[in-house]
Length: 78
Ligand SMILES: [Zn+2]
Image (cartoon, rainbow, N blue to C red; front, side, top):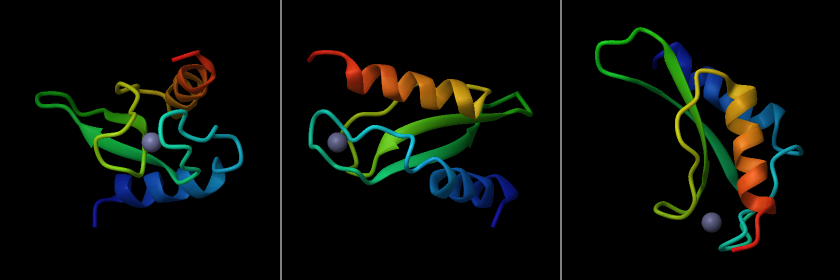
């Protein structure tokens, strides 16, 4: 398993009390994921509701930014 997936799991655990519940399905099971972009060697982070196809942030090079983005999205009125 690639290191970034382990890292993503660690971050999910570390920040689970910081991440707001999903405003759409009320799930508190929020997951931090990592992906690579084609032609780029950086890790990109996003924060997603564990319900596939529910809410998800865009990709950020900073985990902190992805978390901020998630929390801002969930605090917004729908
Ligand atoms: Zn959701």
